[in-house]
Amino acid sequence: MRLLITTPTAVVIDDSDVVAVRAEDQSGSFGILRGHADFLTALTVSVVAWRRSGDRHRFCAVRRGVLSVSHGSLVAIATREALVGDDLERLEHIVLAEFRNNIEAERTARTASLKLQMKAIRQIVRYLRPERPGALGGRS
Image (cartoon, rainbow, N blue to C red; front, side, top):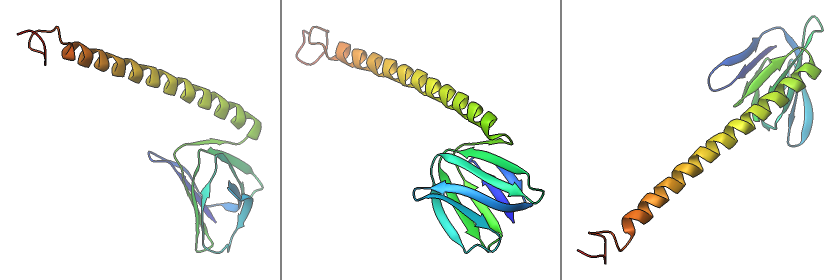
């Protein structure tokens, strides 16, 4: 079976030696084996796990996404973000660190946006002040 995990900018996993896949949607955790019926679901923020033919497990943390099974042999996942790892515990630390970095970057961007909005509002207020020459209702 083939597992394909993609983000908008990269093919994260393209593995054709997969025996089983485990994922999670709103209804809970589920498994996929070769021959599975065609299937489409929306994934939650979770860890997708799969086993290769040599019993080697791998993991990929996904930030939501869409999982589809086609022809019982292709499992495709499209997600915004994906982080891959062989060790679940180590992957957890990587994901938590990445989420912290993302939260900090979002906070910084939000602060910069608010500062820009406040600057624009000050400019508009300054322009609309009646005491300004040429303003509506102001002195000429």
